[in-house]
Image 1: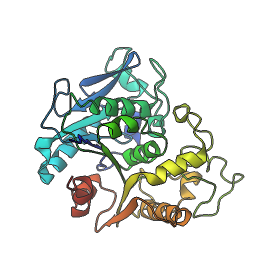
Image 2 (image 1 turned 90 degrees about the vertical axis):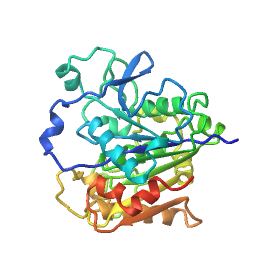
Image 3 (image 1 turned 30 degrees about the horizontal axis):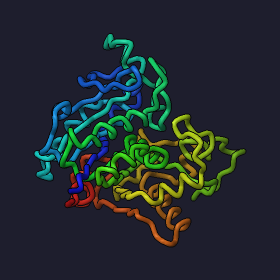
Image 4 (image 1 turned 135 degrees about the vertical axis):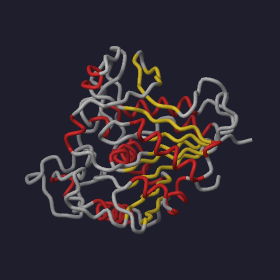
Length: 329
């Protein structure tokens, strides 16, 4: 019998707390730990995952945004799971990517991983206690979930995120997923859901808006392009990265009303502006870019969520969001 797995890597957006909030220490540290290369990642769990979980068919990994408030996201996805009537078969996981200021403010042990500001969104290595990519944290979570002794009846992996979390998912789908072979060995299907990110990584220098290296030096550098890649990516060639990415099962969820050019959390750098003026058009532009480069067809879809703006709860609890996230096995 094939034993699949649904890991849903999901991040929701909440009401903006102001740009200054991300410069402050988080108010809550997630209680659980995951050992990685002699260090520890912080995360929240809806239930323990040490003993076998034969009832679990889904695992939802919810990624926080720039405020690093993982427990808030965990509670949000609990509501989404309850609404979908899938809670009883679902394990929820919320990894937390901390900053040095969080370590100091909460007197955390030196073993806890921490990153420089928002660098974790692009797969950067931690600043302490050891250099660990934020993407490697996701790899280790997936590796644990691929253990059929712990999760004998898991079915499908859906890695999803909204806003800042969606930026993580899009880049991870591009250069991550190094545990694919383990998942496939257990008959695991892997899907991604990318909802309303501020920007995307492109495969070449083409952009929807005119831009040059002279006017915007970093527009084609990682995380916006494939130049100056992070250490995690290894020596994989750009052509192979694109080949693997377009094979992935990806759904882009776009809020119909996510059109605010002045949203406080919108990336307004020249590299992001070259992709479009606001999130909805950036998502549509990127999907059209993929279709143009791969006219033979994509294993990917774009879904517009009516009457919803930059709101993670609105996106994922909508009929369209629920259909994507909790589709029948």
